[in-house]
Image 1 (cartoon, helix red, strand yellow):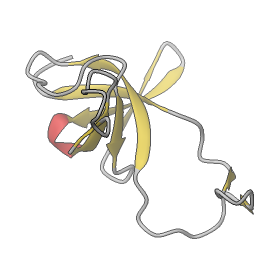
Image 2: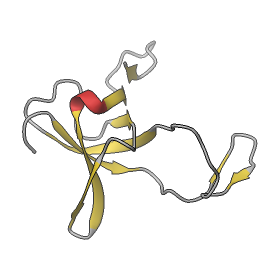
Image 3: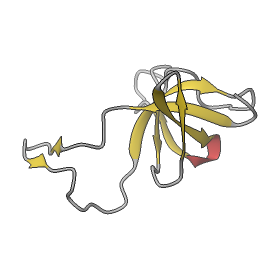
Length: 98
């Protein structure tokens, strides 16, 4: 990885999902601008706030897809990440860096 790039693997798929009440939402349902969670699997040397294994929140419209060893990944810049969920935050914190 070079510079401020972050390589992430998306959690789950683009298929149907369930609401918190258990209602099935089909994959073809129209939704507004929705952010996605992914797990960081590689970071560049200039990335300051993300380490491998962190979950990151990003806009799926602003992404570059890449395939490595038959598996799909997303390549992002650190500035395109909206939030980082990490276990290294203090116990009374939210676990998110914004």
